[in-house]
Length: 398
Image (cartoon, rainbow, N blue to C red; front, side, top):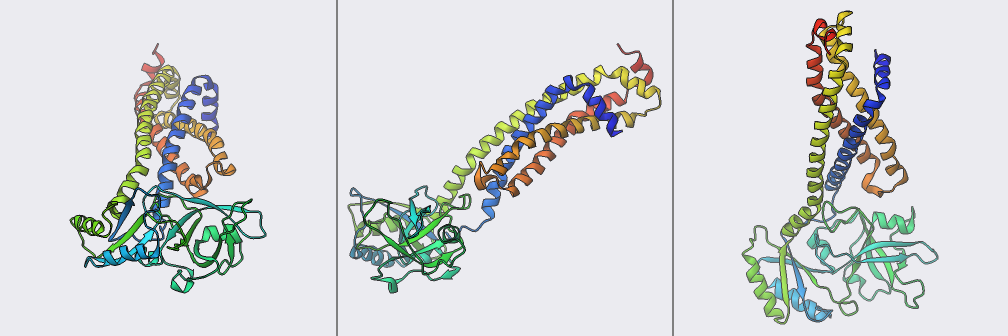
């Protein structure tokens, strides 16, 4: 039976070519949407490395490029904010989580020519406690690191492996100087975290280095993280802004709960895939109409053939199953051809981790299920119509 169906499909290869191309196109469209969605779902399941509950972000807007400069100024902000009963902790950071700001720097291990690019996050000592960052090895930096020759840093495991391979990273030193620079900023690894995805659940994993901020040496930070008492409402924003103005009235402040920033970030990441899904649904609808029309036409042309089969003993169920089985075989061939092209993406690593083998396999299975369902729906009525013909009607059909 299987060989017979293949022969029938091959003999009508000219008619089936356009149908196969439509199915191939539909499969690629569904695969693209499924791969995007599954990758986002995969990323969403991964830990971000921090918690955002009851934390508000304050972005300082100042005329000068270094708004908060010097240990005395940081202490002034810290004491002023902690004076509010709703404020439990205060920390400083280059940019709050869920914001799109990124600072990438190249790093080099002494004696090695391998340069590794990583996202640099500069924070004050309190940031680990405020953001709930848990270390897997080592310790967070603190006042015991004051006056150290090398700036203490905490790396995520991905960056530690990129810099030092399988060797122990704790206690190792490296620098971020340019190749031709005469000055070297040395860093010392004091701790390791599993990961830190500052832009949230849909941010792809990457190399991350958390650097201790030195108020009297480094450039000023613009971000303030305020840990509030649980249950604090948005009405507190006015009170917080008033307190910030008392500390420094020359600057303006953008205040946002991290929960609101998270919602905005998720919306900006999900909007493109929702647009793609709508376009894909429209294209699939067009393909379904085309597929249904072609199947109807093919079935009509084969009425004499169907009548002959009925005359020699085939029942209505045999005809019904034949029409659907032929469509499934045709769909399978088109999808295998598409997979021969799509499998090159994870093999060559063209899309990196965005299309890993887990996502590829799941997207393939989901896409094949959708195409088989589409093929079934489009072939049910033509198959039923063909199976209802009596041998006499079919043989006399012109």
